[in-house]
Length: 337
Image (cartoon, rainbow, N blue to C red; front, side, top):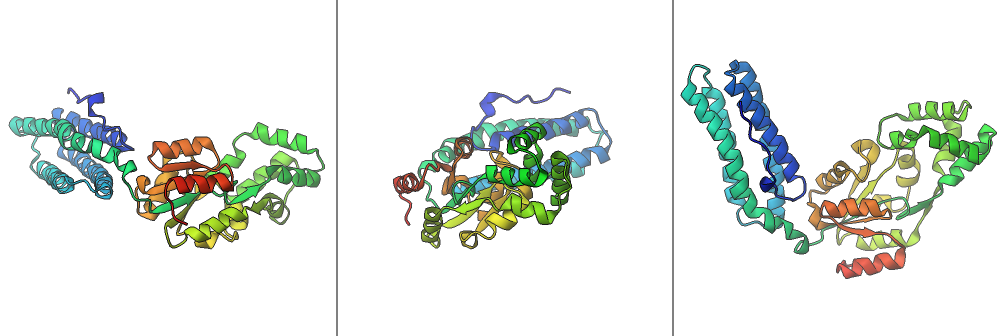
């Protein structure tokens, strides 16, 4: 059975819409294959339902972007989306392997709808939503934690732990480099605190208790007073969010007990989101909690690659270079504080 190939002319070039369209097309093609093979109704129904689920997810995403940007064609899009889901349910109910005319009509509908919808309704909004970043009202300021709200000294941790394990700091640092992913695994939630403790004992060649390792590992943060004062000034004018690549222990002692923490409306932590910056997934977690789209949010981080990733998702990214520069960058965006 011939499939509908993805073509670049279908691209909207806006956020995750193209990836969702590609995923939608994959399910459409799978369904067309089964219908072309005159597969048994149970298999076809399963894919019809999968297509309905994914289409509903995609339509909700699309409509959220269109509503936020004030697109005047939103009602037409919603009507088209509703009609498509209802049509899918109807085709599922009437599927009959013995009726070649009905099968042909179903295949034709799936192909023509996908291509037609993208090339007309979706292409019509592409320019509008892409220009929204320049028109959007800033509603939220999202901060990174380390080196923005609080400084930290990883070397201090290595020195203290080396003393406990009776080895040099350089030797211990070398062992950590050889492990590669241990700290990232802890931050992405791939290992639990108990597993982290066990791995640290193995790497250090020394049986470590949580009572010994926890304070050595976590007592490395120093607040940056200017950022904390800025967050207090922004409170009430904007929604405030936090996105941090962190682990349960640093969250417990470092982030959660910082003076800025109670001021945040939403908190996104890598070990809970199961994703590290610059993954789009961790940014999407923050947006879902804020109930905003990225164009309405400023994102502040000290790492250029993370700021670049945020800008690629159409946030207003600022690289933190110091308190004076941060205030200048916010003033240039007409942020009130």
